[in-house]
Image (cartoon, rainbow, N blue to C red):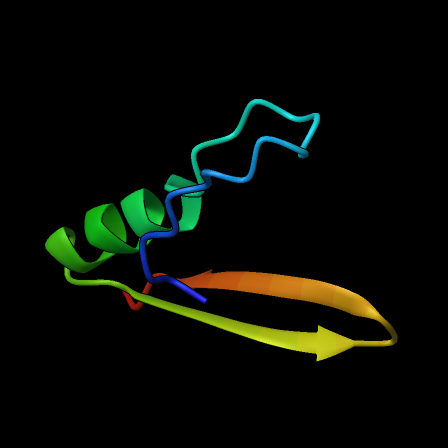
Length: 52
């Protein structure tokens, strides 16, 4: 989920790089926080956990 994914498929219409979640994971890790993903009722849930 958090691996870098460089999109080279010319048939895709969206202009994305596939780097978004990889960048978020990197930032969250540098802040000593946790990030997790799961699916709930067909929705992808991304949680960033801030322990106080």
